[in-house]
Image (cartoon, rainbow, N blue to C red; front, side):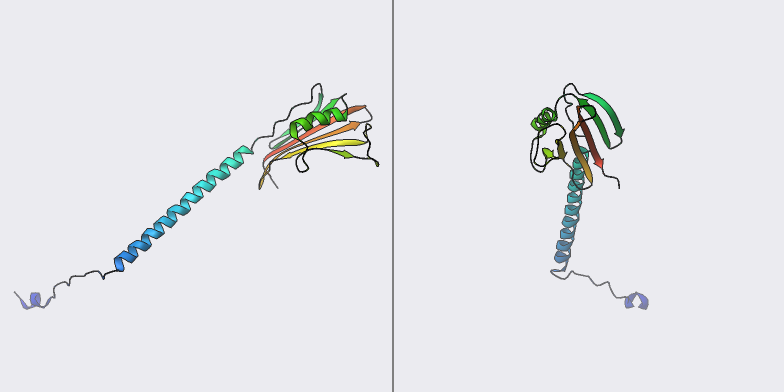
Length: 168
């Protein structure tokens, strides 16, 4: 052999230090598990949010009072309203909707008196029914106002609904 070939040292064999590769491997596995967990939580949260939004992306159904005439109707992308008129008394209409929507303090139907002392005479009280399934920025409400119109001596029923994303 030549002198140049003899002066090249042989490559030293590199041996891993005991414990080092295992700790790197453990940390890498932990990182992978954390990333997969975060992605999984994100997918589940996204699916839940999508389901919540789609369940509130339609109006709450309501029953029309039997025999009431529809006077007005207005429709918009995320809301609508209807005005009905009937010869039935406010109490009859109130009872009809109270049976369907309930009469809780926070949701349902409630009488509101406009006289002191409270009176059941026509024009001395009105009723309002509210169902609100809204959550976060997603609306789903039903409001029914029942009042006496002294000019026509009839009961007016105003139904207002809102659903979907609230636009500010």
